[in-house]
Amino acid sequence: MKPARKPAGAGSVRIIGGRWRGTRLAVPDSPGLRPSSDRVRETLFNWLMPALPGARVLDLFAGTGALGLEALSRGAAHATLVERDPALSRALRDAVARLSAAAEVQAQDALAWLDGGDAKFDLVFLDPPFADGLWEKALAGLEPRLASGAWVYLESPADTVPPVPAGWALHREGRTRDVRFALYRAPAGQGAATLRPDDSPATTE
Image: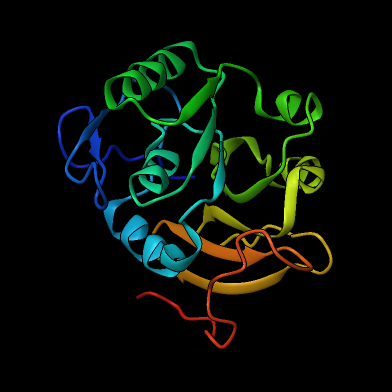
């Protein structure tokens, strides 16, 4: 596996759209930390735009919180940011307080946190440390926490397609040199069911 790459800029990543556009989030030095690039996030949030207003968001393995806070910046109602690393969770709390964001930070192991509650989410960002191979366990634990018809974003190495639960539909996907990023729809119904059903999968070069 290639070493994790730091984002552009000295120790920060920026929110790229919405009311907090241009706001910098701290990037503490943490092994395996690999914030999603601006390019990937721009593509992802273009896909998600109609689904964001009023959505309840879960950013599992939150890291810098760039995905969850970007969703809030663009109209989501609330975000839960789960991150066990102490330095990262402190930075997340600082960012939430600075932005007066409608978010809670859970400084816990993500898999243990999934087992400990029953809140449901319309949109989930799942971008675990690549070296730990946690996609299958996280996806299994995540299923009971999804609202009907929830949207789930997965990020993985470019040559890895994590096995998703039966019935999930791939909505869009893309690849860069280092990562595969994909948006799935969980089965049945309402939740954040506002993306156009006729959108076909697409790949970003």
